[in-house]
Image (cartoon, rainbow, N blue to C red):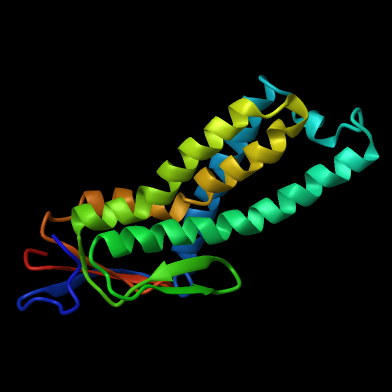
Length: 193
């Protein structure tokens, strides 16, 4: 099913999420992100110790280069994550994707309505695409660069906590749902709900 620009007749709103207004869900999603990040850091520390990020063995210049690359990579990743959402929306038939930044998080949104399968694909596309790309890069870099790249993977997976949350939530909803994600919030509609 392609994206719809008009809500079909007979559909009613059954759910809404807006993390800027719903502080309880905001805390839940951010708590989930922190748990994911902590688990990733602790588990990987057994493979390559975390302190290697702070190592001066390669010299002070290399140390600062690694942190510069990390800061630039974080910003680039945030943009690329939202671009993958937007590209996936376009693949699903959206004509116009809106991008923005709220101060808390970046977003891609649209005025269109997506069926359940399409929306779950849109939600999970960045974590899957970048998860594979970053994992490959992580396997290729030397140990002193491992944590620089791995921090981007942590951002990728823990930063997708909201996408994972809505995927789990929407998976339990009726098969006919339509989702409208306007970037800073989303509404879910159904005939059967």
